[in-house]
Image 1 (tube, rainbow, N blue to C red):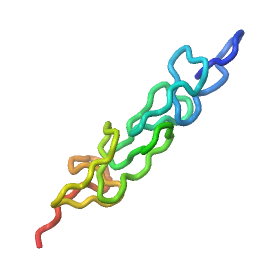
Image 2: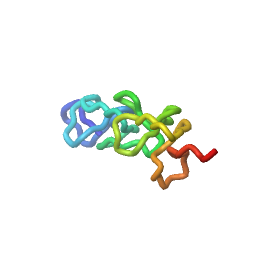
Image 3: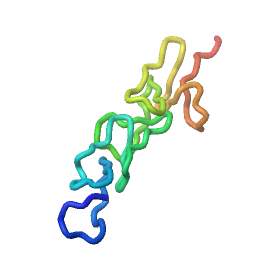
Length: 110
């Protein structure tokens, strides 16, 4: 929440999508959500995208699938190129990801 006028008896405005608001904020647009994180409406802290997802610009409120040929890991600010000997479908997370998502996978024998 933020309070942009004087004399309020209660907060009246939620922090908008793409931004986060700390206690005592006077506007809802001072803290833009950083790359790699999402900020839905009314949050006080950004949230990292899960494995296999990413935000590619600041001010985002939804995560997108990681691009083909790359994998995305929670807590990272950029996607990682899938190295030689591996393949990465769209939405891939690291090989150690425990979620039910596509993973960075070693090319099979043959």
